[in-house]
Length: 237
Picture 1 (cartoon, helix red, strand yellow):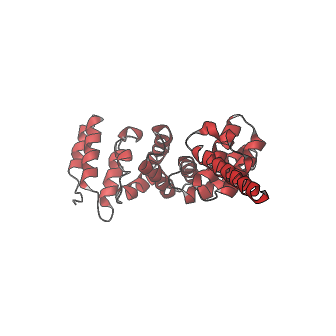
Picture 2 (tube, one colour; picture 1 turned 180 degrees about the vertical axis):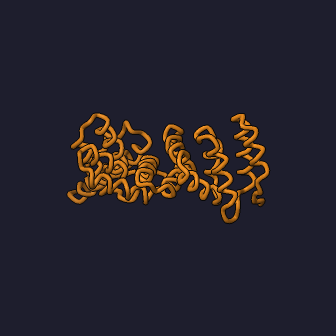
Picture 3 (spheres, one colour; picture 1 turned 90 degrees about the horizontal axis):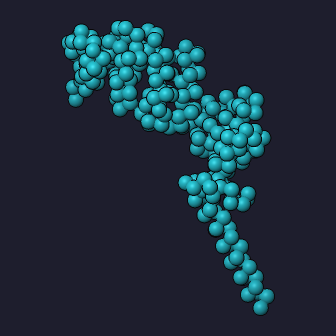
């Protein structure tokens, strides 16, 4: 009899553990479930709990929850970004910036970290690093124009930035359309200069990119600039 009771109790405990773990996993896509997960079983739910605490300016709770999250799931770059935000809000600038830098290295798809690292690179005068971060944002589509356009405009404003953009435009990839489509962000003559520099890079400029640049200038009513770009040699295939 006692053995049967122990067996039933054990099954009940297993059921509770499985149920709590399932609720935690479900909270990843249903934030309203996060508060229902018992503390010992929190993992996915910690993201929403921490974000909620930050939104309510509960700094200490947010920091505690994010640290639990990073201990439970240390690999995702998004979790390090949350840690950085919580630590910066708590006035812990050194550790917050270190967490942000690690998030930027670890996750190219994490928009907050990439945008912050692009800004840091611009402040340091490292145009090539800023362009790489911008390329990551444009390639993944993780950030909107309100994030990417100011970074692109700042790069487009300087000869160093336009040179760095040209180097990246000559590389294989699909993010370049996000730059080619925005001649309005460049100073007069700057857009054409960038495309010409890209065409001079080793390997040259892909013909579809050159043609897209020509069309972009035509839409911007710069017919003379478009005609000059049409004379550029380009890389086919």
